[in-house]
Amino acid sequence: MTNDEKDIVKHSEPRVRHGKIRLYMFILLAAVVAVLGWSFFAESTDDDIWISARVSQRLRINSTNAILLELETGNVLYSKNPDSRIYPASMVKMMTALVAIESIEDLHEKVFLCETIFPPIHAANAVTAGFLRNEYVRAIDLLYGLLLPSGAECAIGLAYFVAGSEAAFVELMNQRAKEIGMYNTRFANTTGLHDENQYTTVIDMATLLIYAIENETFYRIITTGRHSTAATSLREGITFHSTLFGRMDSAEFDGGYIRGGRTGFTDQAGQCLASFANISGNTYILVTAGANARGNHLTRALHIDDALAVFEAIY
Image (cartoon, rainbow, N blue to C red; front, side, top):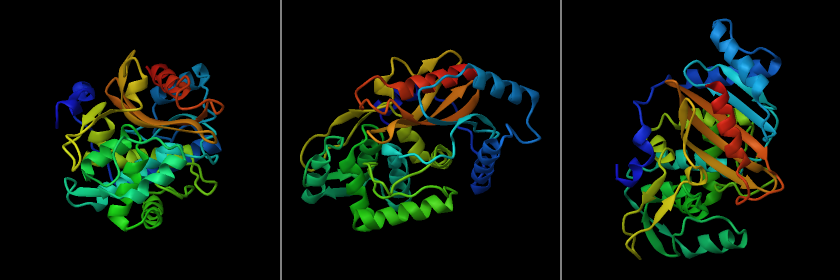
């Protein structure tokens, strides 16, 4: 791990290892049960119920959709329209990254960013990490560029490298989504740019985040605040920052700290955030969507305000 990658990891604790697919299915089922009106399964403690009630009573968030889970138990502590369809915006890039990580054997292999990647990205006014046309870049640096500054060129470059085209890579994304229990999700691109046929729910995004942070590479990247790349074929390298940590005064709050997350924004999706925090030794997963739909990615970060409010309410 480089010195840059250690900036955020100063709060790092040994990561809890969890079960495999059964745990994710359990959490998904817990969320569905919560939608039907039950707060927890029978084995939940009085403390769990008290925390859930307290969080629900205190919260008035900006986001139209939200779900909060305690990772270790799968308990749903708070939900707001959790099974309604949303547009995921750049939260999509979590699946793009996961499929790329699982598909590329050597993440230090160089990926060619062909010239044809860039005109559609620029035409859509998509955010980029700053890589150049016809540049050879390590796959691992493209992953940092994808999950930290949300670079669209990184998403499409990885897709071309893995599957030959973005469309073929999206098929892999949808296949992976079904395998991990994201049954109300359909991906249409790798970048999160708006598409009427690309949708999900906050439950499904929570399922994805829970699964993805089990991958050591994904976890390391998404908990990093700043990364400097190795030299590319065209220059010495570049440095970029996390869109989450870069919009926060501090990742710390009373009782804990935000470990990592992936932000997103489109006009149709509003501000979205999939994040996780450590509070009093436990890990909590939060996905929100639909905040500040009339704003843009530079206006007040209401999705981050919501995350801090939710996590502080737990403490």
